[in-house]
Image (tube, rainbow, N blue to C red; front, side, top):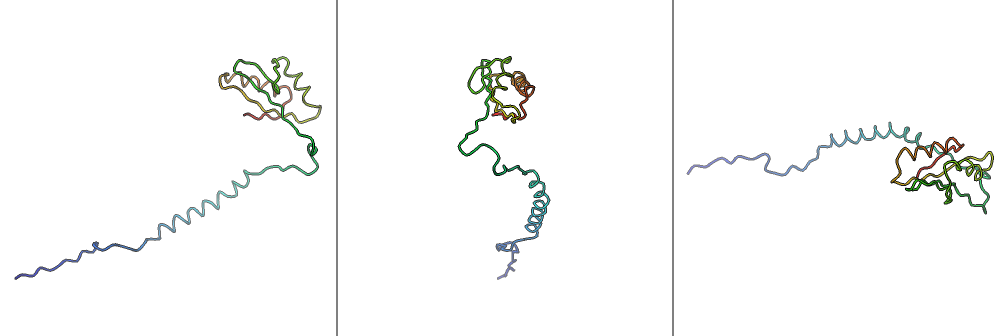
Length: 134
């Protein structure tokens, strides 16, 4: 009887160790990336906080002026229909002299882009400093 030699397979057993070199490389790369990005993000998130004693009194509620451009092409200021020619006088009526002019603007989706830009240009020409778009 001839005996055969058994070959031992090297890969027949499960391999249970972890190569942590690549894990270390990825971790250090992420750490380096976060260290480089963090100062840029902190600079970009700067904000101005209100000072105490400035602004409306506790009992007074301030409402922003809302300008709406409807699908029919009508301009509404705080819900009241105003034509393009009446917009400057209405803005002068709503804002006291020397006050910061801020307006919240909404345009209907059906209205063309050129019409929306035209109304926003009218607002800028009439002293509106900041326009919020909703």
